[in-house]
Image (cartoon, rainbow, N blue to C red):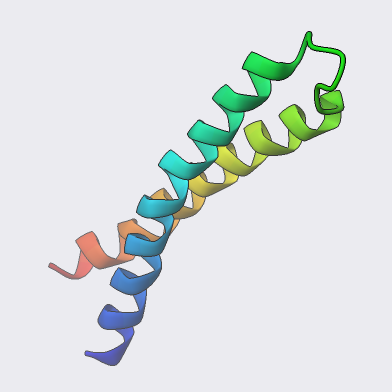
Amino acid sequence: MLTNVLVQLGQDTLAFLQPWLLKRLLQFVGSYNSPTGEPAFHGYALALGMFLCAITQTVRLLPLLARA
């Protein structure tokens, strides 16, 4: 029971993290060509974070669905 709660809590946290990462990525793209733009590795880090967030959500959700 506690395991399910922790898995769901992690899933919900990642669900809120994904749109925030997307917002940051769009801000990065908007400021990329400006003179005060962020370095390119910030964009790569945000894209990697979105990828890892999606993979983690999938991996964490599969055991929960398998038990149902």
